[in-house]
Length: 495
Image (cartoon, rainbow, N blue to C red; front, side, top):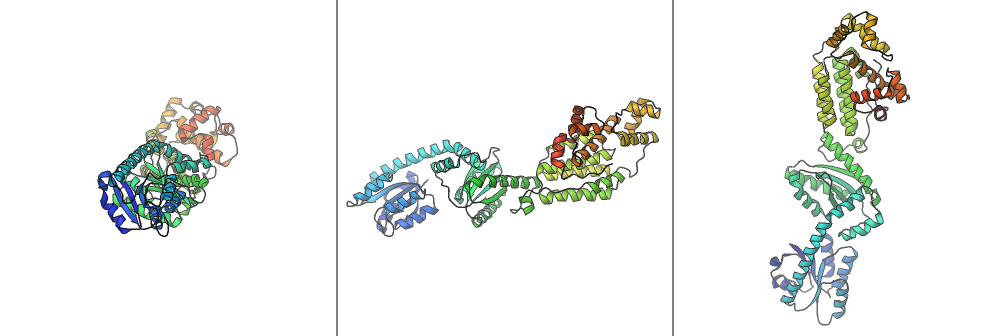
């Protein structure tokens, strides 16, 4: 249904127009009446109107002045002029402003219907054009939020789609929604009449460029909460900072995107994020006590330190990728120290860490690992030969070690020694040596300025390529990426 406003200072004219023709059959709903141009102007400022029928001579504000003022405010609609025989100058002005027709009082019913049918045909055509152009409008808004647009051109293009840029503040919002609620969400956003919106490429969220003050934004969010609760849907919303310039909307969008990622990853349901989360602070984690507890196998302290680090990541709302890497480091330390965690356990949980999309999922990996190692005996029960081999690795990992070199020094058969070592440590000699070297390399990467080649040599690798391959296989990232991400946040001890 198209929305109609009737404007005339004569009550009988307004009443007669409402009964003159079958509006509903034409697909028109009369949504309001006004007794003068000022009332009409106030109405169209606050309501969407498709068609206006207006008298020209009225108190306070004439019909012509009402339409001129509306157009100056970028409020557009189809309009018909009602006039008397002595008002032809007004008629000419109205036609110049784009009137669809002028009707002489008393209104001819047939002429009115014919004019309205023509307008409806044009409105239908405009709607079809708007639908075909909606993709282009989405691209326009996307360019705005991604700071990939000429802002002078933006002002021109926005007007073509029936919107206008104001001097009011802007706030970017990103709303994720269940697919079955999409139509209701679009209707809700449109009814607010305080922003432009487009569908994200992921087809699971809408970006809204909200136009209004912080107080109006709070009211919007409150209405949104009630709306989402009424649908019982799983809605998440990321709210950017409020900015005053159109060129700053991209910054607000980035903030909203970060907030949504945090909400989704940590499953934060409340509307307000703490300042620490809003600013994306990176918590500084110390691994010192954790590693000390690992070395002496103090399980209670291990648990306390792990819980403390996990809580710090959650409290600060660390970026998902940062939390993922920190939890991977915790997992690697546990895996390296406890021999009952075999390679299959490592592979399964490495995959979980890499693919899980929630902090809760990452926590479950650590929890499962702690439960697994809880069954390990507190004291190591290695044979004398295995103890000798571990001492050699600890002291001489930087040398060109091999199982054969160690076997020759211990005057033992290579195959026999390898079988004993794997049986007691659950790892082959080369696996254990590689993991130990990589751990030492991690320490050097975050605690020294040595380049990658120097560090590779320092921990016993004669080939930088082989070091790189082993490091990435065990850590999931390259040595360079490890250094860039963790040099200010990782504090392991020598072991």
